[in-house]
Image 1 (cartoon, rainbow, N blue to C red):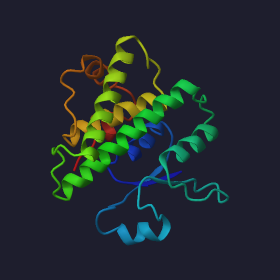
Image 2: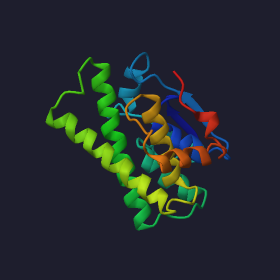
Image 3: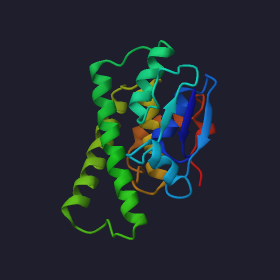
Length: 193
């Protein structure tokens, strides 16, 4: 198995943690620089991760972290997600997409703190999502370490790493992050520039 992606991408990191106990290759890809044309030639979305199973020549290059997860889930015989877990993953993905867009806008010298509909929607989505998960964690939810909790941890750490959200008032989220630092692959894949 092989993952193409960056060391900072939250979508890539999810898969790296999921596969922490499984041998895989990782190719660091600079999607905003030298690898952009190569990426475009195989993935018109210009997004990472990309995933391939080098032992399965019938599998196309997978161009999305959720597709890669579904494949890994099947190959490694991981428990399928139930509907609530799928809903939680959809919330995580939506919030993650919003924050990625805000990061790209900031890198493009756009003032995302302005009172504009687009920015307000992204901030509102992030706040509502993190409040939902803080409450859920406070009620004892998300106790199992699986792809959903991996994705949540990765989103939270990435948002903090990029200074896109202040978690100082979300006690349950902070405890969740602290509690899961010893999970296999978490510290080894912490985002770095």
